[in-house]
Image (cartoon, rainbow, N blue to C red; front, side, top):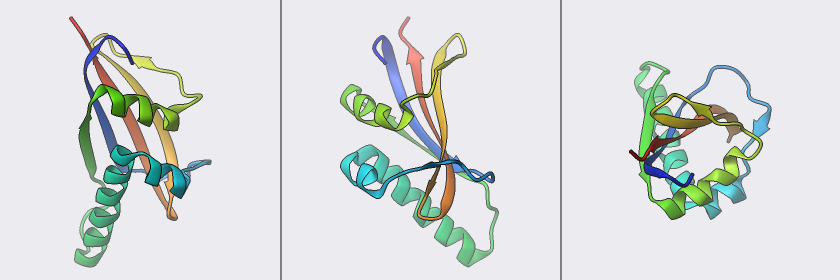
Length: 109
């Protein structure tokens, strides 16, 4: 994602069952992905304990090296161009739970 001044990795709950299984080894190998997956697990566990809402999201800013690492998860996914940003989005299953991961890069002006 060259040519972007900001990049973010977002994770949120997903109701549909994705076909793509996110491998544990991949999560462990990519620190930014590991962080968002840990936040997701903690959030879901806390929400279940409290009986709260099932929809949530979490975003984490990425530096250029992290973007290159995280792009592995989005292999085979075409970008969506909104005019100001480019988005890569994929639904995954991890640990028996379903998530939507979005990599968003803001265009440099």
